[in-house]
Length: 311
Image: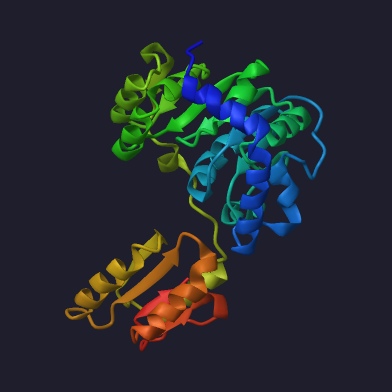
């Protein structure tokens, strides 16, 4: 097993001093609307439901995109094994809300515990997964190490690493090597990710390129009546979508939209921020910049006079 001084120091800190820090972060995130107050104990590793009997596969997905990508795989696994249950952990309120309406029977959502040893231990003591599957690239060191220490097989699924992420990990190459060595196998999205992971210490015989699960995901469900009503309102109007946007991106999108409207005055922008709780903030920005806009959360529809539909 590869060793890392940086990882050892991090683990020592999470075992002794991280709990108070984690509690402070929880309070800050709760005040900012980034945590679910009714389920805050889950972030401390305290489960809100009992562990079901029988085999349990645990999927960890960072947020909405990653969790939706594995939904079809979860459904197929459950269809093949009637005695199987699945636990899926995520770290955002939005992902929990999305999964609430989409998880099949025998699948349970739980917020991922913060990466303090006390919280991680409580989580693993309760759930005792038989297999742990991590998606894409979010690796919490204490959670990885503690899971491996219990001889729970770990798989890295749909793994993806950008150049920016790779460059950050280069400064902690020993830590990356130590964490990656604990995974039995990695199914990566592309050859570039394989190259990056290999540079960080993942053994090549433990990796295979499989493409992205998102391409095989089923279409998201919708209310057919809502879809039909929206289609009637738009009535052939040109529309473009900016989805999962962040704070730094909306102004650029709006600038591009204003330019495009010069040649297509009826063009409608549907703006969907990655974090829905930012809706009021974005609405205030649209108001200050003089945009005519409507909001889906107010049950409004994008009439012709509106250039932006905030969803």
